[in-house]
Image 1 (cartoon, rainbow, N blue to C red):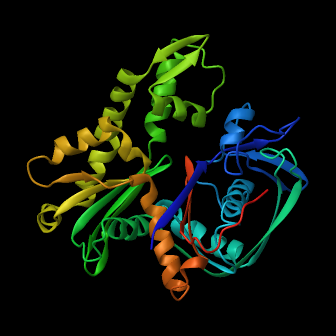
Image 2 (cartoon, rainbow, N blue to C red; image 1 turned 180 degrees about the horizontal axis):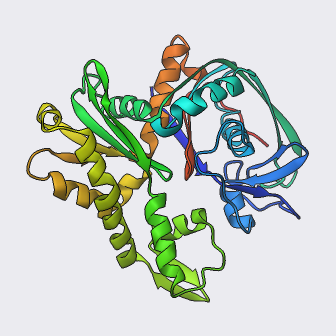
Length: 350
């Protein structure tokens, strides 16, 4: 079965004014309603908003969670059969705190989404989407990442390795064996946001950043440059500096605290995953520290692995009903939905 992933930035902003014909399709024209208010979500919010953002590691009881959840489901409306089986998760740092609240949220089973198709269709209108959830499960993000890694590498017997996932809000990791996770080795701490905030503080000493929020600086951080006062500022050297500092002050101490020499001896490899694994400055620092005694490898499509792992978990709890399975990673930087491709069940939202 082939997996398809859909992603959009995890930001939103209240909608004001005219948003018609501002996008090419639903994914890029997400505009949904909650409690009588309309919101631009994802790429539409980035283009049409002024200060799009979200609370980092939001609780399922906050509006941020519900808005992004409904926007994500909307992108599956024409691609999966209902009722669906869905898997979601949290980092270890918030998993035990938010798990019950997330289960209560999903136990509503029926979700109605009001959305506007005029953002991408000349003859569009206000519409309603109905979603029914049959089964659901909340699992730790790192578990989803490990499942996704095994499925993506097509090696279900992949055992005895360390997985480290670099997210915007959190970095977490743990050791996986044939028997499962070794919980003694599982950690969760400051994510890439730590480095981005340091970069912001450094830039603010020299430049006026026009009140850019951390999500907007994150975009500049990824691109390696930022525009301010009609000038492009090259961020590559500063990015390297703050990422090296982040590795030295956050990541390396975590590895020393949670893993013993015996753990490294028993492991075949360290896999890096999550969106932060795309930063060569960060992965190079990792490879340099472990060069002499254990291989370090960036996992394939590292930002998608958690969502893919959730999808395969949904397949398991759905009794192998691929057309009804959904994996949803509501990340702090991006929301990623994974489904199994099904050419016999496709319609188009107009």
